[in-house]
Image 1 (cartoon, rainbow, N blue to C red):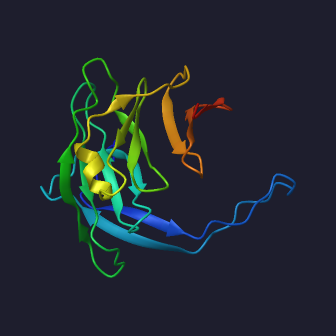
Image 2: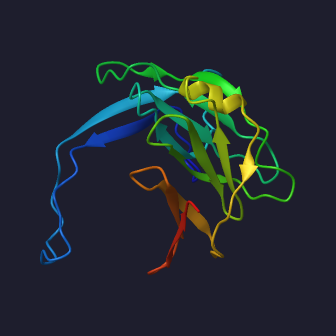
Image 3: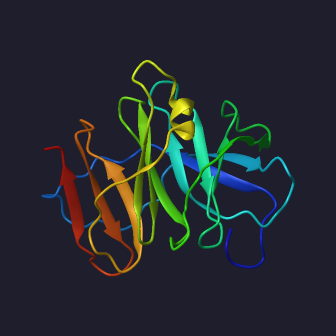
Length: 185
């Protein structure tokens, strides 16, 4: 929601991921069936912007982290159980201590596959938030963030944990950007 006209009601779309393999020939774009989940923010403002979406792997709850001006702190919102028949109202969960002064706005997030924390990406910094293994996912929002290594990327906009949670990948916007991997030592 960063280009006029700004929308007061936003939506998340859920699609079944098609099966693809590197050996498959390029295919023409096809329309996929989808579900649309409309939502609003609790303050009713239409100027919220967000690029970070996470799913708690333990509960399948969706979280949105807003993208605010450089150096301002982002807010985490939780969506109630998905229901395509009505407009959902997001619930404010926490205000994060980042992005910090000198950081760019938040552009991506990834929940750890075990539900013990998450990564939050800005264009120039990557943070990891970790809670105790027995704590719920939302406990990570209160954990102190740790700066973690990230590749040099022109406009860092992508992050995801590896499937086993023992590393992560980052990338940038643009044509054919490199994909950087950081693994556990």
